[in-house]
Image 1 (cartoon, helix red, strand yellow):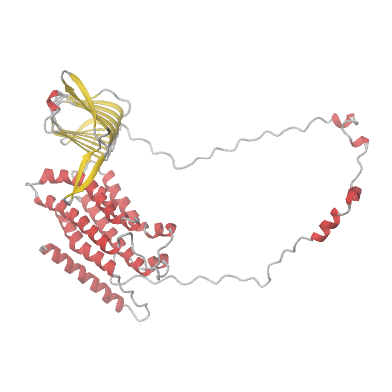
Image 2 (cartoon, rainbow, N blue to C red):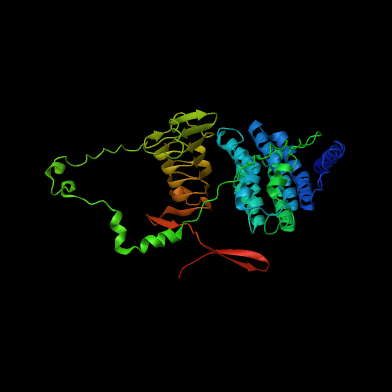
Length: 470
């Protein structure tokens, strides 16, 4: 264990001791503090040993947005500790109630993701994206029956971005490398914790009390020496009427049967209709005309949901630092970067472009396509590679040389390679309908990227092969 980890654990222990001391000495009138459960204590030890060093490294390397994300995650970890302690004292609530109890955790997840989405031009975009993918681990508290593997999925999703950080900073700035490794270690140790204390889901107490009441009475996640405020005073007692409510009398069935037994005499009380009252024998009644129909007024149409947000205006191509930015274009097939202004050190970033064609006429450092639909991109030489993320119906054509493609969370992607780029490495993750076209014997050959795999265990290791249909 490193010196930073030891120091962080000591600080966490001192904080807990101060909180206990404040509760004990807070006055004789208050209720005795509830003893913390073993699972909650183990969770705090996990955060003190593995998350605290990660937070300390963030303070060294992080910008304001990354620090804000990590501070929010720290608050979320405290809320999880509070929830684990509540569960140890309470019965498992209904599905509707548990959503209210985990509301503060859901708010943290939303905050972390919004910090990423609202700062797409941040220099530490990869860091923001890593945390935005990893934050899903907090959902383990409501996942059944396998919360541990769910945390692993969150870790795997974050590795797509953290590997970019490692590739950029390895051998240059080891603090960024440590940042990635500490996050990975924290989520890895969390899986061990869940396996030990919450194997099939968050552990509740079958003999406990009401979870909603316990959650409301629990102290706030950010503890203070003053302790939590007392409950509000009880409201006024309900008003009880002095007069009892009237009791409805049952229907008189005897009178009903008496009327039915009258037989033909039952019509004796009806009034006789004379000829002057009959329409077909009295012309004056027919002269009155028919009853005029009243025109119906159409009811106003109901509107459902909030009005859609207006789409931002198209932007670019515009050079921001070393990045060409192209955003929010739709139906534009004539987007071309100026060849005399594009340099080798520049990268090209396309965001939410739909039904467009983009031409990159000069050699660039990298190409990124984010949240595109029905988009075509043609480029020459690319130094680092091309990335396609969260996109649909994308056509990418390489007319020069490129080392690799990274396709993540994309559907219907076609990659067209030239003679110089047939050696490119293509990495796909959570994708479907990816096809690769390349030249072969003077013609073009198109093959699909496999989507089905077979995994077996051999000699204690997983062996995965492509599923082949005979």
